[in-house]
Image 1 (cartoon, rainbow, N blue to C red):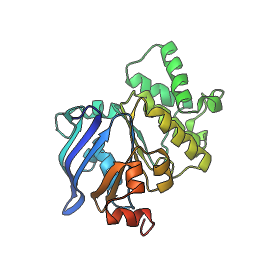
Image 2: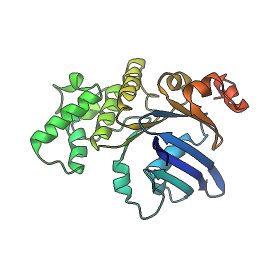
Image 3: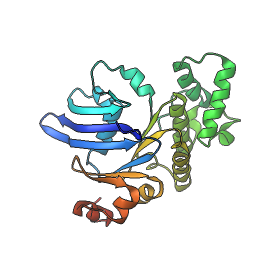
Length: 253
């Protein structure tokens, strides 16, 4: 793989019975950049994300072919350690799903999975990851409260902190701001812009404003196919494919 490429997807196909969800997908995702996957509902964006951390394994009806190379390893090979693979990926879902425990333990749990046991080390890292997620100042006096008492926006930032605590290389985000208020959405977007210096970020969205604001690269999908991909200024400023032009002009969503 080229030195700047973190993920290389080749000839990726996903079938659910006779229905084909992804069709010959070929994408190169650069390291330490934000790659935004755009497209209307039902175009395969979320399925693509699930392939990246093998969540497709949870659906026996799905058949996946092709290759996904991460640091020269094909993660679709059966012998790959799935648990270890997912540790390299921080996942942020459409709606936040904090663990049913305290704010503090949501982060401490991930740290213990990494084998960190000393209380002093755990506490220092809990503070660090809450600060990274722009949440520490809001929760530092509430650490022993259930995470469920946080607002939706705070819960999403807690889930981001928990995802970072597993020490991933890649952050996968599936419509991470769609359920949030504008201020919380801005927090998340700004945090992604900061985090890309240390992580490779793949973000699924249908919000063109968000893509334009934070993307380095854009992949546009339609009906399971990649229609166009490239740097954000190229795709938005001078799209090559007619279908891309229609989508960016609001002809369908």
